[in-house]
Image 1: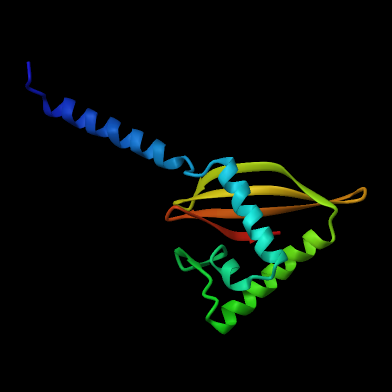
Image 2: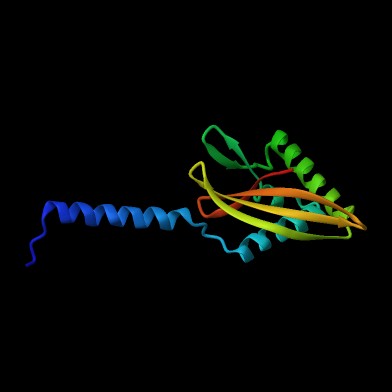
Length: 144
């Protein structure tokens, strides 16, 4: 009693590592968090607030994701282009709906995809928005 064998300690430690891995595989963001982030990006795009919007966009450089720096001329140009593209989807649509939210673990980051249906009359255009959980911050990595 009170004495543990090396085998018991090893299995206890191994079990703890597995539990931690499973917990980390889950996204820290709720569907509501994801929807709110998308709404914020849509609002900033509509208002052409490029500087604020840059903090919500990310790109991959090497093995890590970086937030766009609006003070860098080349990166500011990319942010404006992305914003105008989102604004065009919104301007040309009567409404939009989220048709699917998917959360997966990929490349050591939580990937979150949202399928958005932009509705205009009888026409529907599906655009997939890809977010990444980068150090606890939800950032837009791609949309197409």
